[in-house]
Image (cartoon, rainbow, N blue to C red; front, top):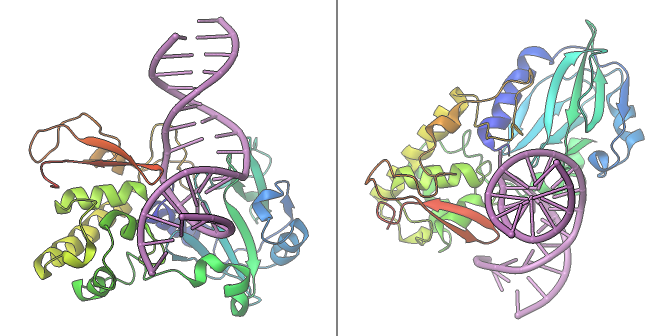
Length: 277
DNA sequence: AAGCACACCTGCTAGC
DNA sequence: TGCTAGCAGGTGTGCT
């Protein structure tokens, strides 16, 4: 579920509401959520500490602590961070609870238990959180100009969709936003990345910025199953502006023809065969 | 290197 | 109504 705009929305929420507040008692009930280390390591790593900043790299939340350690959270498919009053009913699948001041608590909720919570020494990031060390440039923070995107596309000849999905190439895009970006750019998901002309690279870059910017402003996309919500439990609205993802058989905004869907590399790809020929 | 299948889980929906 | 199969936003591994 959560891709860059959703994680960015959570990051901004944490920056506004949790950063700077002392952490109280920590309760870990979900073994799988802390599988990178252990329940004891997470409890010991967080209790009494303070989160001093809220950062993001790709889909990873990076939360530096006041002892120079780093709290890393990845929501994967179904993870949520929720801020709630202490004592209010905890949702099913609440795996980690961190006490805060003012009778509030921060909860990590994750039905599918793919998400992860780990406290690491930043110096040992490559060993303790290998996914982060290999991340490519962040799709929002590190691709300010077309000149930043071009080398990623030209490095090798790969189909655009798997390239954009590859977190080692570009960090932050997932299945929804790759389909939205390619549709708006009028580029086939199967087009070889290195075959793009300079003007096509510029167009793709502009669309990438626009889609992510609009999606962040809309606080992300919340689909029918409500698996993505922000810290306060509210949904995003960018799904209302999806032009490709989830719109199989519905008219393309460009040509009016039906949006097609294909199963590719184990996941759905939505595109317009006419506008993205 | 790159591409693919599959594994990891639960919950929801469509179809019978 | 009730069961089952299929599907889901992500990533890591292990195989061609």
